[in-house]
Amino acid sequence: RARPPSEPPTGVSTPTLRTSTTGSSSSTGEKTAENLDIDIAAISGRQDTRAACVVRGLPHRATRADIINMMDAVVAGCYDCLILPVVPGRNCNVGCALVNFKYPAAIIPLYQAFHGKRCKLSCGGSRRVMEV
Image 1 (spheres, helix red, strand yellow):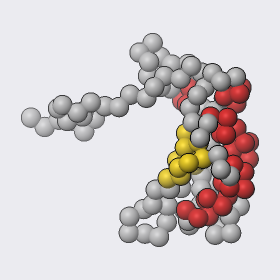
Image 2: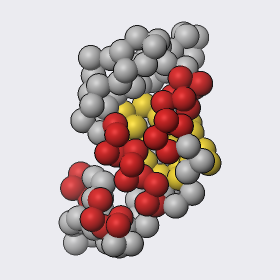
Image 3: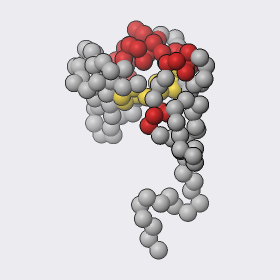
Image 4: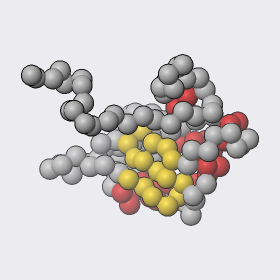
């Protein structure tokens, strides 16, 4: 029997995101858009201990070195992993990067420097607004 595309294959479990102590979640523990947002007060008060975030709205022409230079201007030495997915067969990225920080409070200066602002890289700015 053919399965609808929305169902996972038999024996494969679907990942469940952990429920944060900030924001609201449904009674089943599912993530909602509200509790995925960065809450600076919760991070400062050590209630939100997530140490990774996604930066969206990056220029597609930006290289990994461009993004590292941009990040180092704000949070040098505070992150240990940066993943910049690329489009196979093309010389561009997908417009977002995953950053893992050494400690959660390091997200705050990144958020303040980039969230809601346009990217100003030498590879060509973006009309898109960055989101953290």
